[in-house]
Amino acid sequence: MIFAKKLIVALASTLALAAHAQHDAGTPVAVAAKVALRGDANGVRISEMRVVRRNDILIVQADLANSGNSDRTVFYRFRWLDNIGSQVGDGESWKQMGLLGQAQQTVKSVAPSSVVTDFRLEMNVER
Amino acid sequence: MSRLITSTLLLCATVALSACQSLSSPVVRLDRQVNYGDAKSVELVTNEFGSTDLQMIAEKMVGSLLETGIFQGRPTVTISTVKNKTSEYIDTTNVMNSIQTTLVKSGKVRFVRSIAEMQQGVDELQRQNQSGMYKQTSTAKIGKMTAAKYTLEGELTSIVKQNASTKDVFYKFTLKMIDVEEGSIEWQDEKEIRKTSKR
Image 1 (spheres, rainbow over the protein chains, first blue to last red):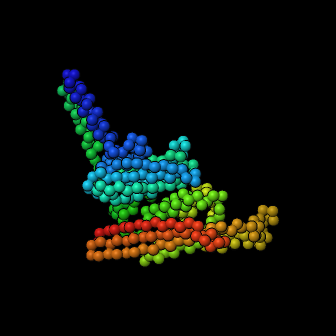
Image 2: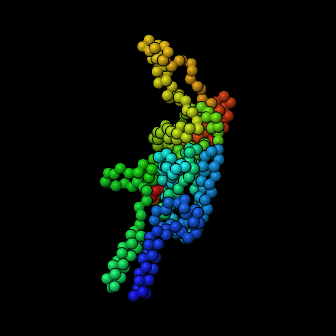
Image 3: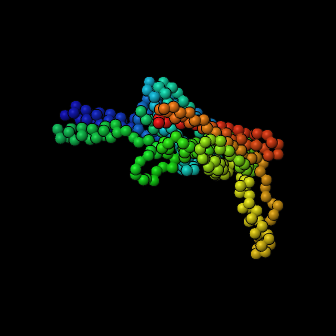
């Protein structure tokens, strides 16, 4: 009885985790906090993210790496936020980027205004 | 007990199934149905110049301009010509409008009337000052316009290659910001776009 309960809890936890744990294991936790990923990463990890404020404008660069051998198509855009977490502007357009197997590419964007203090990288990866 | 296990397994299976379903990507594809879609989606209907190209060009140019810090002191800027050197009909004014809108909203720069917008300004000034219908104290005075320190000039070119199975289009948008008084190019950047389609 106790074993059965433990099994159920473990199974439920694993499946619940599988439904949410979409980031690739190679994406650092601090980076993952800035990424709004839809679905599974399909082997694409964000190895590094660099944020700098230059001329009072936030500039973000993210390194996307495909750890698999198959090519991937990444759809992404940056969402800019002010100091209370509200979105600034209408939002960027979605961009499509091909990522070859075992390749790395850097995506970059510049905030549209000085009021931007935070951001999220929205993305999904097609197989 | 067995009912509990069965129902839990059923729930888990449902969760697992929903997690496995493939998600749709933010793209616009040719479809018989009519929908209001996301204006920011990646448009893949044909490989001709489209909304995503316009948006990507505008975002790249605005980002590059803001990043350089060339707009210290909110200088005045005007838009000059944007040449379309591609074989397609493309309203390049639209690209410049998007760039201007984002730059104005950034608060970093002031735009003054372009050559294309000048006649409307002249007409309004003449109406206020020469029609005799307005109070002298309320009219906008002639000769008070602020001239542009910088002018933005651009061009869009394309290279098209195709064979029996593939069509490849390479677009290049170049934008320059020129100091009107000195004639020097103070900033310049390019946006390259490659679109390949199967025929």
